[in-house]
Length: 417
Image 1: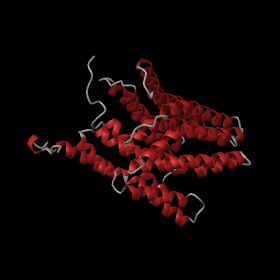
Image 2: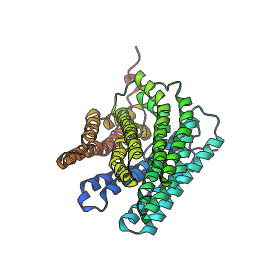
Image 3: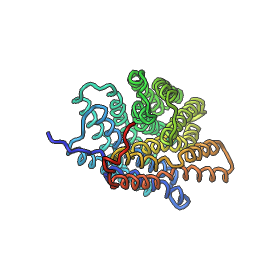
Image 4: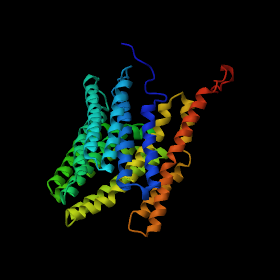
């Protein structure tokens, strides 16, 4: 059977450009928010449903191929392109339908998103069935579980777009967040970082990583089901118990993460950004669990979730996404070690400043503060995160420049002494 080499390397427009487009749209809405309908909802969904979901489908397939030792074949790019096109078209449908008040358009968009993710999940299951036993096959199971949860969350989102009365509206929102943010996004990130985290730190994978990943997955899935089921049933304490269970699942898988970081502490923008993102996940879930469990009504739960959602979106999802992409993009561009080093150096420019700007501003702006302080903090967060976009294009130019540079003659190359 003939295979096409380097199917995952180099520039692939449908793989590489949509994330940039969604991120640019987030920046545009942030700058023009007084003139945009529902700007907060729009920014959250541009980032999570657009940029993050696209990245998940791309990179979870990339890691599944690597971990299961199944090289991509010539037809894989065409099939994946169809899925990505369906996903992004569906996201546009959701955004246009909700903002325009056209529920059928939103429903069709959500159906397209769910179909693309389900097709992605089915492809991963087929890979698992035909692959030889793999040490970190559990990571692919995280991806499959995540893909199974997104369509349910999308259906709940469609119901929200249709319109629901109180307190059902608040209950469905919590279930929707649980399935999509903790399930689709959270499970994918946790499963990926089992192997990606030590790779980013350039150290060995902790010996307990495989066992911890296997043990944590059922705990996390059960916790998501408990949170969403408790919310839909109107049981606040049950929903809070689910959030605590999710934290317990994270604690199980956290041991190898911490062990790895202690042996080789984070020392680059990608690792600092990912570590900060995980910190925000733990903090936001802890606050939300207490908030849901102690709220006097579902209206109060909705208010507390409304306060946490931007921090979970920006602090957790955005920082992990940009940190991971800052490491992965140079590798995906390929071109040899020199090209990867040049692209990596470009992606990591002003890394400490960017991480400090974002996280300090989030911490200062999280509690109730005067509006001028909140605006200043928002500007710092936007500047720190949006710097990724020009640096990405700088990295691409640096990579191409290195690839076009003639190799030095053999006699001029440095030799080991």
